[in-house]
Image (cartoon, rainbow over all chains, first blue to last red):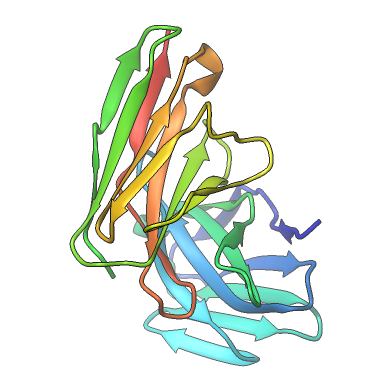
Length: 111
Length: 114
């Protein structure tokens, strides 16, 4: 059973601090990793993709991938109230067209 | 990304009826996917729809209940058949534009079955 695990939260972070969201996955053949943001009542929005070990930065967002530990994380710097949302981790298995979603972590940025 | 539209955006239906949801993309895509998201839950893949072939259904979903059409590279429909209150959910289509499996989602269809 291929699984993607996330802490459901809610994760409460003060405005201006760094929010750290974590995700683990079970299948070692995973090759592509994604973070989606979903506001309440809206559809998921792709915010980061990462394919190789290490860090990938895009504005206030940094994705970190460690394939040996089967771990991917998302850091949000200078957190803003507008970052309050559910963050979904998703993983693609090599040779498969589909991606597998975790259950999501609810993030709440405290003003 | 891609511009994806879905119709209807929401509907309230009676038990035993069927609803067809449309998904339109602004450019040609190979892979389209249909998901269900129940309140407070994550995304559950219903099926993968490729143009020119039968849809591939995930475990727990069958063609008789969720028939899918994919007549061309920019359009797909999902029908929810013989609906029951348990089918109340948000239904989402997504597309893979062929760039390392990135998927982009439509705005969703909120279905309520009474």
